[in-house]
Image 1: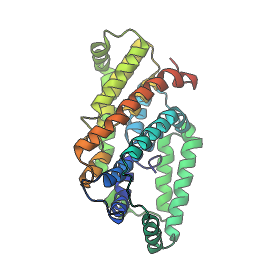
Image 2: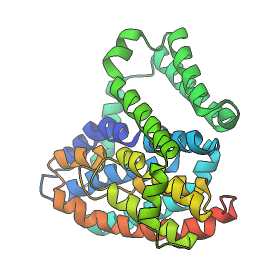
Image 3: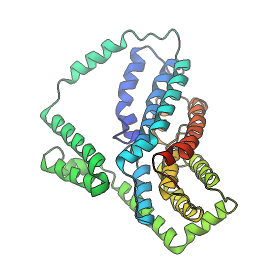
Image 4: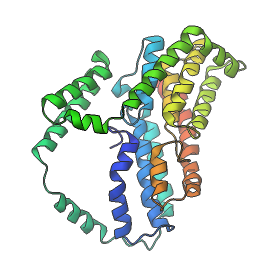
Amino acid sequence: MAFFISEHAVVAMLFPLVLELARASGARPGEKLGMVYFLALAWGAIVGGIATLLGGARAPLALGMLQASTGSGIGFLSWLWATAPLVLGLLATALAVLWRLLPEDAALDGLLAHLNARVRDLGSFSYREWKVLGLWLMVVGMWIFLGEAWGLGTVALLGVVLAFVLGVADWREVEEDVNWGVFLMYGSAIALASALQATGAAAFLASTLFGGVHAKASALAAILILSLLLTEVMSNAAAVAVLMPVALAASSALGLSPQVATLGVAVSAGLAFLLPVSTPAIAIVVSSGYVRPLQAFRYGLWLKGVGFLLLLVVAWVYWPWIGFGG
C-alpha cells in the first residue's frame, strides 16, 4: 500500500486492523507478539514508502528542488528501479528480525476466521468505491507511462479534476480532509531552496560542510550520513528540505550527478526506524502501547544499519549501472 499512499496514511488506515488482530490473538501490551504485529506494520510502511514517488512527501519535495535547481528530474519507473534492491533487502532484514522476535507459542489459529468475518461484515464494493479504484489505477498508470512527458504534478491535478467530474469526491470532503498547510510548507521549502541556490548560500554551506572532501564517493557517503542522522531528529520531509540545497551545491562542485544526490538524500531520509519524532509511522505504533519507544529504537537499529550499508552499495555499484552515473 505504501507504494501508492503515504506511509503514515497506510499505518493510520491499518492501525485498527492490527489492533483487532493483536486482541484476537490474545496479545497484551508489553508482550512480544503484539510488538511484532505493530513493528511489522510500521516497518512495512516505511520500507514500502521508499520504493516509489508516492510513499511520502519527501520524494516529490526532493524532485521539486531538483527540477527548480537543474531543470532535470527522475521518472516514476526510474525511481522504482533505483530503489528496488534496497527495498527488497530491507524487507528481508525486517522479516528476519521479526521472525526471531515472534514467540514460538503464538496462537494464530483464529486470526483467519476473524478476518473473514470482518470482510463479510463490510459487504461488497459500492459503485462509488469501484469508481475510486478505477480512477486510482488510471492515475498510477499515467504516472508510470506519462509522468516524465506530462509531469507528475499535471497527472495528479488531472486525477483531482476527474475525481470531481466523476462524482467520487466533493468539495466538502476536500475542505475537511486536506491539510492545506502541507501545500504551503512544501511550496515554501522549494522557494527556500531556490533562494539558497540563487544567493550562493547553498554553495557556502556546501563548501563549509564538504570542504575537506575531494572524492565523489566520500561526498556521497557524507550526504547519506547527514540525511540518516537528520531524519531521526526531525521529520523526514524537513530533513530533505534542509539538506537538498546543500547536497545539490556539493554535487555540482564535486562533479556528482544531481540525480544521485537527490536519490541519496530522499531515500536515506526515508530510513527512519528509530524515534517517534522522525516519522508518524513510528509515533503511531508507539502510541498503541504494544511497542515501547526503547523497543522501537533497539530493533530499528538493525534496519537502520543494514539500510545504510545496502544504500552505500546500491549507490556506488547499482545506480551507475542503471544510468544514474557521475
